[in-house]
Structure formats: C-alpha cells, structure tokens
Length: 173
Image (cartoon, rainbow, N blue to C red; front, side, top):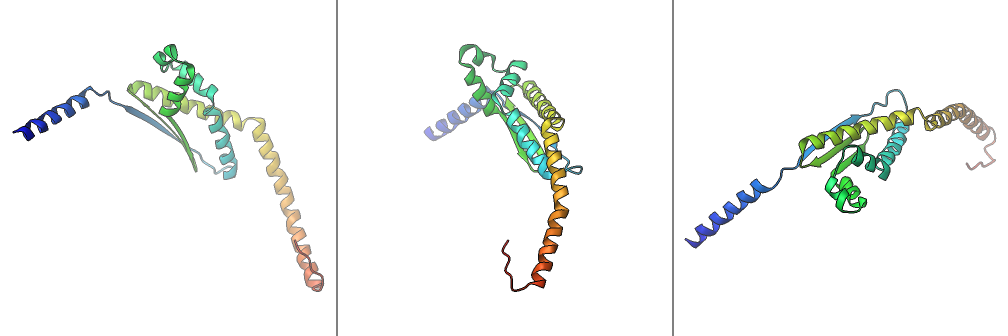
C-alpha cells in the first residue's frame, strides 16, 4: 500500500510540474548562399565577416532595444546580463553554403519576431559588404591573381625547358 501511495504522489507531482512549467518555443530560419557567380572562398570570407558583425555587442544591443527584449532584466540588472541572456537564447551558425538563425523564448510571437529581425540584419549585412570597399578589394585581388596565372604557367614551362636542355644544372624551387 505504501508503494502505491508513493507512485501516485510521484505521478501527481510530475504532472503538476509539467502543467505549471512554461513552454519554450523555438523559431528558426535558414539562409542559403548560392556561389554560382563567384568563387566559394569569397562567400566564405564574406560570411565570416558578416557573422562577426551580427554577433557584435552593438548588433545584439540593437536587437534587444528594437524588439524590447528582456525588459525586467534591463530594468533591474546591468545591461550585460541582458546581453548574456540574448547570446544564450539566440543561435547564429554558419555552415558551408548556409546560415541558420534560431531563437528560443517562452513567447512564440517573440521567438518569430527575433528570428525575422536577425535574419533581416544578416541579409542587410551581406548586402552592405557586397557593395563595400571589401568587395572592391576582393575583386582587385582576383583580377591580380588572374593576371599572374598565365605568367606563372609561362615561367614553369621555361623552367621545364631549361631543365631538359641543361640536366647537369640543378634548380631547386
């Protein structure tokens, strides 16, 4: 009889805890990056730079302020606590060819708003970087490399011909 009472009380306590615990909602988005028009390394560097910008304290504070997140935390505790909480609940991951944004909250509308806002900021950062001096620098480097490639091939051919004509001379490169 005692075992039955313990099992029933444990079951009731578990059900009560489940019903009283607030639900956690997650929202996520996936940004696919097409690399058909440019070299994949260009978009990898661009993605790394965009992620640094979006994960910066300034961007996180902008998101917190624009969406009025963590009001109680910001009012009672130092602002750093709200930043820590934002970093804990917001996930921005970059893998090859995509960027994923996800956020967990007790409010489903808030989770969707945060993901939409951060996704928009990521896309905006990409757009700004593509039209920035960074883009021009990469284009200049790519042009320089494409101009050097034929010269390198010519030098290799001449080196090979020189080695075949003069096998007694050792050339180490």
